[in-house]
Image 1 (tube, rainbow, N blue to C red):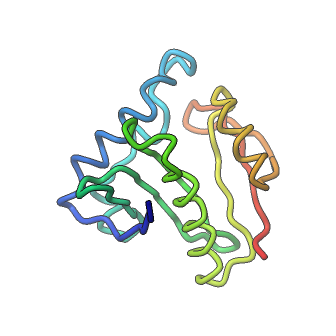
Image 2 (spheres, rainbow, N blue to C red):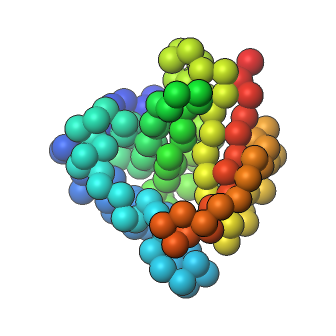
Length: 150
């Protein structure tokens, strides 16, 4: 299955919100509150051109939020619908994010995840991200990671 992200439109908003809800709600008890991506304003992010989606069989199944910063591309969010998990969609979106960062002229891409999301930290470490620092922001304990791009 080939996964090609496209810019999100407001027609995708409901699907984006549902995917984010499904992807992150399982962490609420572990963190003690809603994870950051569940609080984001996806309508505004769509207006800013920051959100990409991937469709499979005519339905949005993946969400990717990229935010250009002064020295790196921020991979702000990546989420896959439960029905598409294990299909390679998440990996394809991560590869797209890295390629988008290269095309934009960045030499690195960064992300953050909640320190309670240990599975994410392990995954990102396996695919070449290194932890840069930990900080508490907006009441959330975040682990920042970065990856040099070839």
